Length: 166
Image (cartoon, rainbow, N blue to C red; front, side, top):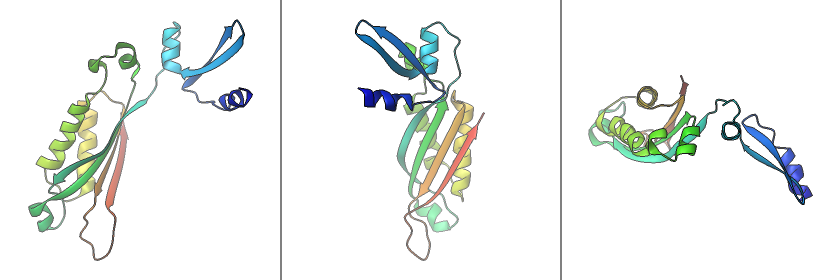
């Protein structure tokens, strides 16, 4: 127990509050998310940024500089990380207090499968703009991977990562 307590004391993040509890056989300390703890204890609510992540969504799109890429299409892999405060969703357990994953997936699918861009930079930028505009989030990170890049050589994938905040 002493070893755990020493490791516990090393947790010194502003988004966590250490709560000390006195038990009949001694005392214990817990680290809880600060916004949840402060609200539950009647304190002032602090802002926080939690994350919703959809990783490795796979679609077939028609993006690329070369005409054959736009004509034949190819596989695109997309990661999205949304920053937002999930305190209300934690308390209510209601879908209306968070981002519906199916809505997020539909926005990404629509841009990748129904639009055409020459550059994956443009695809990533369009996704970021739409997600910030259409979802109740404070930040968006989008990764677009293109596994089949027409280069004269071996390459795992080309990718663009873009992050924006309100």
